[in-house]
Amino acid sequence: MKTIQFRRIVQLLSFTVFTILFFFGIPYAFQSNIISFTPVFAVMSTNNILSILITFLIIISVFGLTLLFGRVYCGWICPLGSISDFLWWTDLKKRYVLHYPKFKYYVLLFLVGLTFLGIQLFWWFEPVTRIYRGITGFTTGFPTGVMEVTFLHWAGLALFLVVPLLNIFSKRLWCKTFCPSGAGYAWLTKFSRYKLTIENEKCIRCERCIKVCPVNTIEKEMYVLNPSECVNCRLCAETCPTKAIKYSALKNDDSDKPKVAITRREFIGSVATGIAAGIVLKHIPGWNRRRSVSLRPPGVADDEDFEKKCIRCGACFQVCPTKGLHPEVGNGLTSFYIPRFIPRVGYCAYSCIKCGKSCPTGAIPNLKLVDKQNTVIGTAVIDYERCIKCLICEEMCPIPEKAVRIRAVKPMDEPYVIPDLCIGCGICENACPVEGNAAIRVIRA
Image (tube, rainbow, N blue to C red; front, side, top):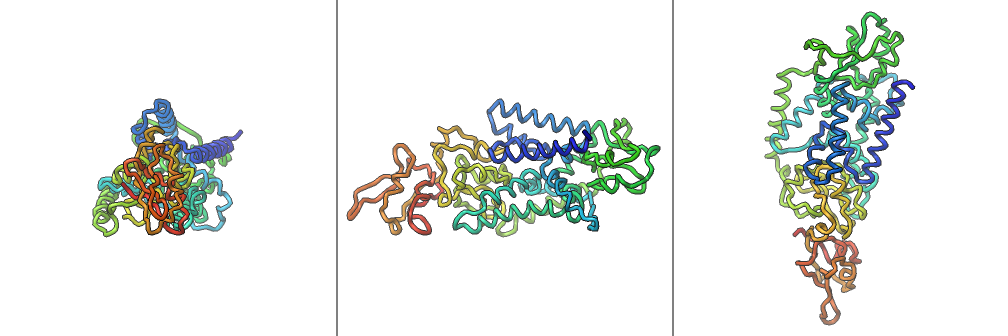
């Protein structure tokens, strides 16, 4: 079996595993991208020894491969890169060749600069979360009567589709020009042990390697391969008729180490630009989070902490059995796309803890069932002017002691809420038969 065939199999298996993990709400897919720092959050937010061991096993494996061969993650494991490779048929003979590798370093450093101001936007570019937001656009994008949420789901899908569509203009255009994770792995190649090199004695200058390279890492005039941009796809080595391209160990002298195509001035300038942009954003009306009235998943107590930890991956949207979790909109740009609980769309099941288990960063606490059943999301309030006294809310209340009860009032009995017992699961609001807004609604505690 040729190396390229083996790589295709690994890519297909990796993508399949990523998809299965997402649909089952298992967060280990996020931990495979060591540049995203998600593994750190995952380990800090769990007390499960098995989860910690699996996390460190994944980190060590990916980190070890990177230190040995460079950007193996980009070329063999990354699901977004695999999609770009699978779409080989979009590689048109006449196409715009766009290649500006420095730009991805600017993006990464700009995002780092923003983090100094407490603004987290890296996750909008991270490959795993981009794919998962696209998937949730298909699976949870049609909540009845909530048009702005439907728009957000489809926007996430559209942002994902941009990446494969860029292949029309150039192979792996996103990977080699825009991806900040790729820039991070490129820096790590400075410490890698082996790299692909071209032996000048064997090279016949046929340019086959240049034509098949998806990331334009081979310089045409000098026939030199830049390891920091190489994604180890090995298409060049498989295509070379004289077998002039092969792995060789890096020497100890600095001249042989991979070079990252960015100067110190550009490094400082990119970070400073991110910091300056953060200062400007902080003063833009509508940027800062306003006091939220939106309900959050169980266990989320502080919006500010939630915004910093949440990576907007949509995993909780996917695993929610009632589809009651959807992205936030209209509460300041800092809280844009974080999970919002909409009881009218879907209630929080009394015996469900899936959202906490699926969260890769601990933004939604992984509560035990008994703790979750005593965690207050909000409090139900009855609008008696809209209430038709059907008493379904009392019947549906899952609290053993009944947070919604019935009292005798003429001309007919009516429901009432005991706030100290209500946890705001929203099943009463979801089941209310009143058209439009329910007569009983959960408000934030």
